[in-house]
Image (cartoon, rainbow, N blue to C red; front, top):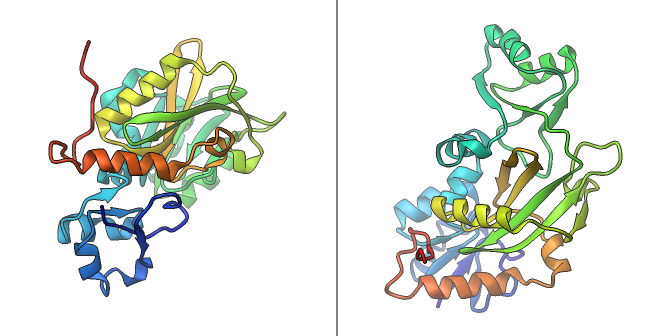
Length: 269
């Protein structure tokens, strides 16, 4: 199996991988054409690789297109699992919508930038002043109810299965659970029903490389979002080598009976 990767860090542990700098994509077209899989392209490369060169990519094109934009991510969650989405509104920037949001949401509420990660661009809005600042800095508003939780659940999917799941505990007096911002990892008491739900939804959407973030509430589990390029701290603590999991998954998809654009789903028992 011949593999070309545009990200050497994410491709560690995957045998037989040749690294190409992203900016060399057009100069190295023949090498790319000869590869069985293209690994971890940057978002701007995806359409050229899939539609122009007809290449199979990992992560899947669904992972890229849905994971790149929190508005599209929210809309697809509304479509496939609306009961597992916190109360959320999406508005275009318009003066008439500023008051509408304040009528719909009590302070504090959460506002998100459409494209960001590691907790950046996720803001807990406490006041009219903070809301006006966000509203005028963003052309699209993604507003969500605040859930007063002290931890969230990260479920990491690689290929067709969840390979790790853990709590991310929020520091005392904090808001962010991201490990990069001080969140603490705990593997104790992870609910298997939440992990099964993530596997079902990721399989339905053909998302094959993502860290899903969920809240546990009295009413059930709610998806916040997923990140296609998640942190690896939790996997390292479990001694999971992502490259080995990816390689086994790609080998299975490379068998003639498998269509790489369709998820591998378990049969009903």
